[in-house]
Image 1 (cartoon, rainbow, N blue to C red):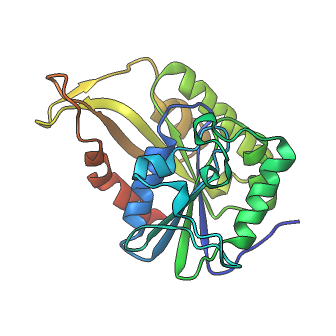
Image 2 (cartoon, helix red, strand yellow; image 1 turned 60 degrees about the vertical axis):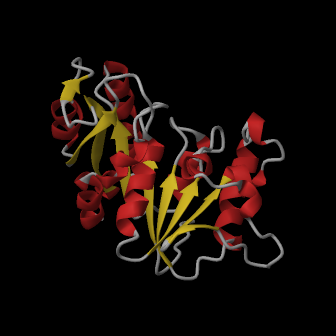
Length: 245
């Protein structure tokens, strides 16, 4: 059975390899889409949820006193909710059996107050986890944004994810592929290549007929100081992707 939630646009941000930047892309898309309408940034990574931490929010901000739970307010037009909100021990992460993962998705969709929200950006768990399979099979996402980096193993894993989407007849739902950490960028705007062992455009996009959405750099500081990570979200690539969705 496919469950359709009318009036909302569900966007899955997915990858088959951890650490390639799904959360960065999810937050960047939420920032861009919030210029249009209300956005819920939904962290479905039940193994290692970190959306709230990236936003500087605490799971304790959730008000459980109402029949419909309002997601945590972040800034105008952006709210967030995470598996962190259901974990007793924040330091241990939220590890769950498959049935618990499915229950989390179902309860989240039915119990959250989504008034004023048009876009639901879903930060998916890495890999072809049962959460991803359940979501793709039963929740019918409107758009799927795939995140990879140009490292050889990441590109190979991305091909596996694309083949899974082909299996579920969802190839037409893929908005495109984002190449994260494609190069390093310092505070002075100077660029440097980080990986050179795979061609995402050729080996994934052209091979499968998928749109190449662009490159995102890794922000660094040449002097070893802590770079301003928020510079990433100001890049025009997120607004460009938002226009495609």
